Amino acid sequence: MRKRRTGRHTCLMCVHFSTLLLLVVTATGCWGGMSSTSVMYEAQYSDKRFTGDSTEYFSFGSGSETVPEAKIAPIYLRLKDGTVIKLAELSESTASDWFKPESEALRKFSITKYESSTGMELTSYKVDSSTRFVFHEGRLLKCIIDGMSSEGPFDGVQVGPAADGEFLSFPIKRRDLVRVFGEPERIRKIEMRRAY
Image (cartoon, rainbow, N blue to C red; front, side):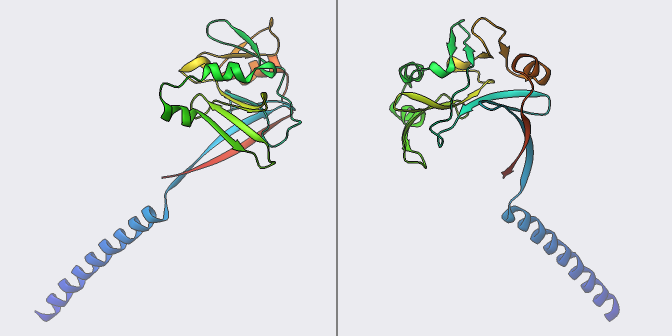
């Protein structure tokens, strides 16, 4: 009888130990942080960049808030209402008119003033979490346009190299990007880790 009891006791201890081990492994995974990695690609030109996956591009960017001499690409935007805008000539007053938040709290989120790492006073206008325009003394220094935005002035925005030329709608297929804007100088792979 004693041997059976010991066997049962040993067996119960094994079950408890394995349950405890499972809990420790599970808890460690949660406390240690779980993460996933997604890969994006950036088609880079000397004055602009398009970001997306391996076959399509979803956003566009140009300029720099840390390099005052950086130029905005000579690119045109066509808005949903048909208005065509030369991006390099975009005025801060036009950007300000686009960003008319309904509440003061939203205004604080959408329009911010700050100093760059190089000491320049900047004003940033955000349409959503991805689209933003950064100005210094009324001149556009940097922009990031989310071509997949479904609200505000950039819902259905198109980009093109000339006011009277072809415009591309987002998402932009890689072959169309090359056909209209030429071959990128390089394609940069960007790995983004997200913890949860």
